[in-house]
Image (cartoon, rainbow, N blue to C red; front, side, top):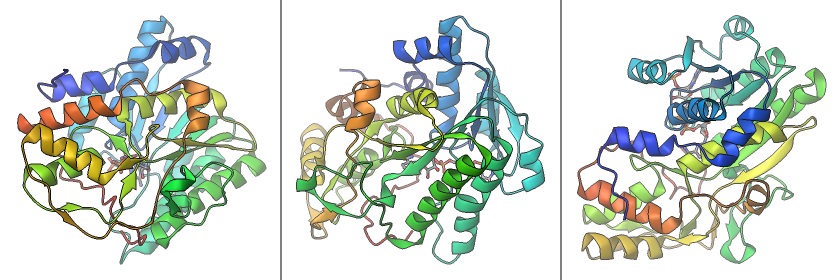
Length: 341
Ligand SMILES: NC(=O)c1ccc[n+]([C@@H]2O[C@H](COP(=O)([O-])OP(=O)(O)OC[C@H]3O[C@@H](n4cnc5c(N)ncnc54)[C@H](OP(=O)(O)O)[C@@H]3O)[C@@H](O)[C@H]2O)c1
């Protein structure tokens, strides 16, 4: 069983490039710019890209753009070989001054705090894409989106697929559909090649749905079972898929669901953590018939299955908690099915 001893080891594991990503770097022309890099996923995505480029033996820059409200992220990135540029993506002239590169990953966004400042969420999720889509009109752009643009569905559906019509619940999800629509429009009018990357829940050990449930079990709190099922994917795999998705960006845009292969019952995960952590489980909330469920079969047909299995994630997460590993203190609120964040 793999035990992650510390954050350096965790960051390294999350940044390991797959053989397929390394091969892609040999084919991909031009540099890569990650917009909104200074968040939960971006740091190790940048590091993974640098590692893949190095292993491929090619010459390519990875540039990370964020406001860098937290300077420690910037220091890590520079240390890992990622060039950084501080930029507020809501500042149109600052976006227009960014160097043009052929490959863009757009992962800046706003979710929590939407209630009460809906305008800022809309600006971040739908206005900033207009500036980015206009400036990078000759680029490939992988746009991070969410499975929350779909309606809530029953477990028997097998999860939403790309052909399903969006039906976002609440303003955060509506603004995410806004982001997709603006990039679609930019692609049509300005010509950018775009892939809409609809992700459901990355797992790092410092945050994520597994982290949230494990923490409730560990602290002997009732596990919230309001949303009874979910999907997750190891963050290293999600980031690898996002980088590899650059090759699949098209005009008009392609849509791609991204998650793990299982539809996972909250009760199954809680019981597994209960066994490993030696805790009794209690629940709160009545399991709803419908949840956000992402059918990522198309992504698996393009990229293969994720390298890290659900069982491995469960085991690493439990060990991380027992060893007192750091938590980001950023709950996913995956149990929210009203669209209010
Ligand atoms: N993590 C998941 O499981 C998950 C699931 C579904 C969808 N997503 C989406 O995928 C994307 C990446 O996820 P994440 O968890 O890494 O998000 P995150 O932690 O919120 O990171 C995004 C980063 O974007 C930067 N940013 C925000 N506003 C900006 C602005 N005006 N200008 C420049 N940079 C800005 C922020 O860094 P600075 O403060 O330094 O600017 C922020 O840390 C997000 O859009 C998220 O909503 C994530």
